[in-house]
Image 1 (cartoon, one colour):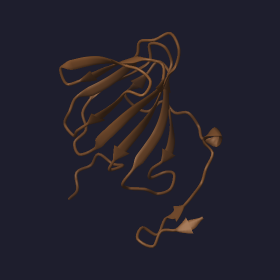
Image 2: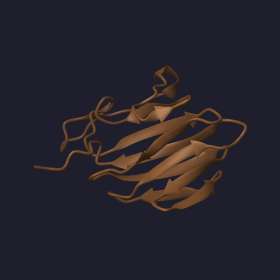
Image 3: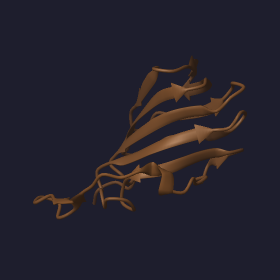
Length: 129
């Protein structure tokens, strides 16, 4: 472990096998994620980093963030991404950048698992005071 002198948090190396799969609010039908780095793991207020696996027909409902920016990077499978009034099929190595205020959703439209990385900053969607 290495202490970061700015944040006071420890740097770490980890294995995701021991982390639980969770279905977060607004996610349905087996839309599961593992929190890899964030407030709960590593104490980061700046980054929320997850790996997600959506079962066939699983989805996250359309939503928008107040201040958060997000990147989704597809590793396996395929899904339908909605970005405001546009919809696109996403496949391995496709990615999307989502600005704050942009309505977005993702659904697994394939026959196998949809696996992707999600990077969000800041970790909380609450506006700074």
